[in-house]
Amino acid sequence: MEETLLYLREKLSVLPEIILVLGTGLGSLATHIEVDARLPYEDIPHFPQSTVTGHSGNLIAGKLCGKPIAALQGRFHFYEGYSARELTFPVRVLSLLGAKFLFVSNASGGLNPDYAPGTLMVIRDHLNFIPDNPLRGPNEDAWGPRFPDCSQVYDSDCVNLAIQCAHNENIGDVVSGTYVAVPGPSLETPAETRFLRMCGADAVGMSTVPEVLVAVHAGLKIFGISMVVNVNDPDNFQPILIEDVLSEVKKAEDRFVRLVMAILKFF
Image 1: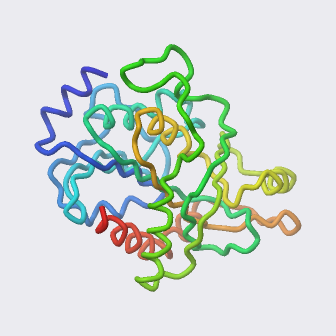
Image 2: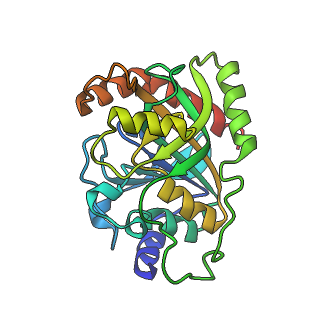
């Protein structure tokens, strides 16, 4: 950790206040950043390497809407073979650099039958079914408490702001709901889809929650958007292909970028 912090302090002229984690296919938001430094993950000491289609693998530092940010253009997943602590290493490092806010995004499968492909779901709460926790093991007290409170993980003011911004900017199909994280990489069966619906989840994916738990531990404010790329109907289940996921992300990406930038203007 100290070696990575030293490297980043040497490379970044402005330290980020906001961490952006850009999920599957959502890396184009980085094109709107006034770039100060673009660091491939492979050049950053001890950083994991992204192995998934739709994840570029760069840390981009600069300004977005006038705010100093660090964008993780491509994230890491439990199913790639990383432990939860390994895949959250970048968020931990950036929190120790002084970031105070985490914005997470992902592409997900819809569970709520009222959703449609392209729905932007502002994350209000989550369920975690990934069988590892990045806070497991000895606690570093200087980084955060042994038992962090999760009674209100996602900042309610930011959730309400996002819904208001969507209304003001005429960005349709924006809702709020509960995200569930599963380990993957296999997609859900019809029976699993029914079960996750019964648990109260509105959308399902294979990421996000580990980074969020580290951010909670570090005392960061947290906001998240999940882009629903398909809706799983357990009574009429259709095959899901990564090519179709990326295609749906592409269709809704402009609305996603507009919403994020509208929200950041208020920070």
